Image 1 (cartoon, rainbow, N blue to C red):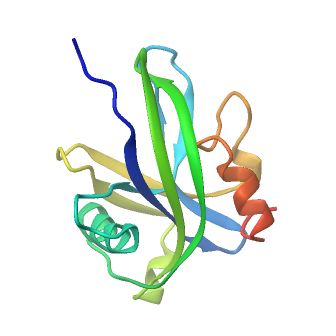
Image 2: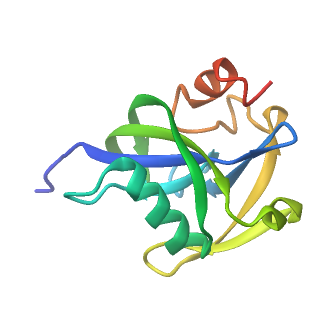
Length: 148
């Protein structure tokens, strides 16, 4: 029997010209398309801000500055037919290299080596059928003035 546990997660919202950088993925069971910012699990003994710096370096090979906490979300969801529960620290940050913002997409790799492509998306890209996750993130970003 699989033990259920709450996962501590840190996500970083990079924004530019009214758009945010997100990874698009599809739930293999529900076939729903979702969008999520860059980030990942917080390791034991690591602050969530340090996790952002590490995750962005590991996934995109890029350095960040001006890491700032926007808020915390609690996410209860089903992915790949299994229930999940995450406490999510949501950050804003800036890429250390400003030329990164000129790229329409950024290639990256998950911790398991799986490739992904992060792209800049406006608020209009997200809908109930293709949501920005975790739930509540869109409203948090709107209230912070990062999405229209």
